[in-house]
Amino acid sequence: KAGVTQTPRYLIKTRGQQVTLSCSPISGHRSVSWYQQTPGQGLQFLFEYFSETQRNKGNFPGRFSGRQFSNSRSEMNVSTLELGDSALYLCASSFQGAPEQYFGPGTRLTVT
Amino acid sequence: ELKVEQNPLFLSMQEGKNYTIYCNYSTTSDRLYWYRQDPGKSLESLFVLLSNGAVKQEGRLMASLDTKARLSTLHITAAVHDLSATYFCAVISGANSKLTFGKGITLSVRP
Picture (cartoon, chains in turn purple, brown):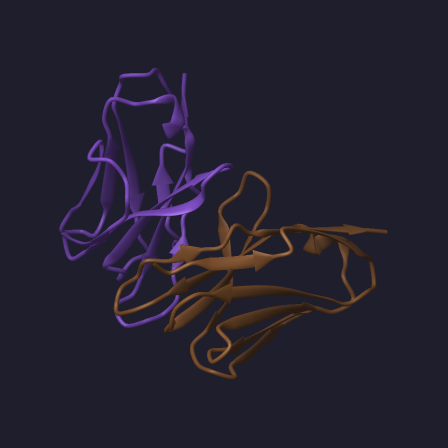
C-alpha cells in the first residue's frame, strides 16, 4: 500500500505571496490532519478533515485554510505569507475508528 | 488545555547502556503515541498505547502507559547509534484525531 504523499516537497516563496500544499492520504483513509513544525513552536495542529468536512481546527490565523476533496485528497492554503510561516508542513492520514496515524514526508516551506 | 511534557529534552547516551525517557500529559487521554524523527525527515510511528498498563516493545524500545499517573515511559535497552533521533510523544483526548505533541527528546548515542 502506498503511503501518504505530499507535494511539493520543497517550496520557496516571498512574503505576501500565497501557497497551496497538497496531501494524498493512504488509500481508504478518509481523515487527513495537517501540522506545522517549527524549531520554536514545535509540532502544532492546524486542522483535520473527514469526508470533506473540517472536523477540528487549531489556533492559527485565518490566513491558513484547507479543504478536502471527495477522493480524500486534501489541500492547505496559506495566504499573505509571513517569514514566520517558514516551516515543515506535515499531513497525517488515518482510517476511521483506527488509532494509527501515518505521516507523509512533509513539505518544507521557506518564506523569504 | 491539554499539555504534553517530555523530559529530558536532550539525552546523550552511551552505547550499550539502558535509559528511560518520560512523557507526562495534563488531562485524561484516550491514546498516546510515540514517534521518531530523524533530522530533516518526517515522523515515523513507533507505538500507539491505548489503555492503562499497555506495554509495547519493538527491538530495543519498550513503551508503557500509566493513565492514572498520566505518564508514559520509553525504555531503551543497550543503546546503539541507530537510535540517535528525536522522539516525540503525542496524546489524543476525546473523539477526534488532533494530536498534541510534546517538544521532543533528542537522543544522541556516543561510542
